[in-house]
Image 1: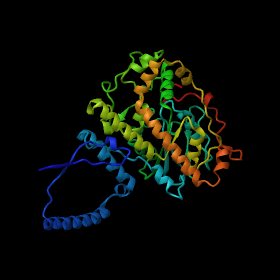
Image 2: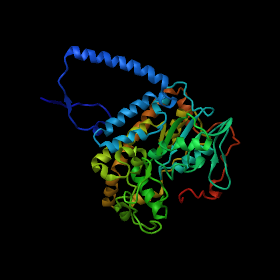
Image 3: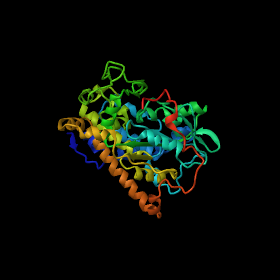
Image 4: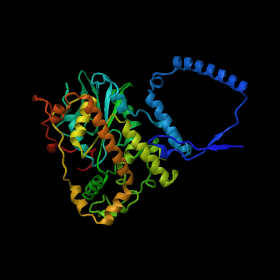
Length: 431
């Protein structure tokens, strides 16, 4: 007779675990069981010796976090079918986690070694301003040098022409226009190897910004209404680009200029809805852009949990609504200093649009962005937890926080570079 037992798991991702039942088989006789255990121990020891001798560096260098991630992915995908479950092997290098950075008392972002910062730029979150801060306002031994003919900077290490920053303004859109987590983790290593002409072991540190979802969505609406499309984005996943059938266009003309808010919200394939969740999740877990691979409810649960996990494991993320706190967390995390304070803009174009919403429009927008709303709530709690931890470790917090961006010296760097007078890089979207 088969017995069933339900299992309770205390985890942020418990909702994603299959609500299945575990089968308990009849136990083998003890003597036979003991023999099996002895054989297994012998094989395990032999395997460790052989594996340690023959395995290549890339495999042997896997961290504890890599192993945990593989376990998490297996749990997340155990009931989603083989085609989805196989996706976990496609992840290349998700980078060092925030906990790994925080728990290392001697940590420092090492410009002289092979540390690389990767900026995951989500549309309409303030990423353009943050990206400019990274290339022009960090106090570095060798500041980034920016080209006059286009919006691009060379961000090299102090003693060699090797890139330490992977972002729009340092490398361009090498992994695709506004590449997401799925695209970046499978692309960055190869692109840097190609750029530097050799294979190098690097430590990656992923960084990103999030924004209150309704304000971000309305900002994207206004941006598209003015003619932006981002139609050159690749939407690459599991070795291929999303097909027109998987991502049908919301408009038939050259762009969607003058679209109304109701039309914008009515298009089911409009990636503006829950954009932050989609861009932070491992889309391979949900069959990429093939929505038929999972029921909608299950797809949403897996995607949201994956986005939360990836966000929590990022070395850094900031929130648009908390510029000063976000700047402090970045500086304390990486032991790098910005030469200017971040500006807080509380009144934006989306603010006016939000004030003009009808109750029905507001309900509709909240509904189609429900995943982003939950993700942002999670991110906000996590941001303040990180802030309090760093604050508790900082004996000079009051002085530091009151003088963010004030280095007390004049720099001869690139802070005076006039971006507005530059010719627009043709690989970027309309501003």
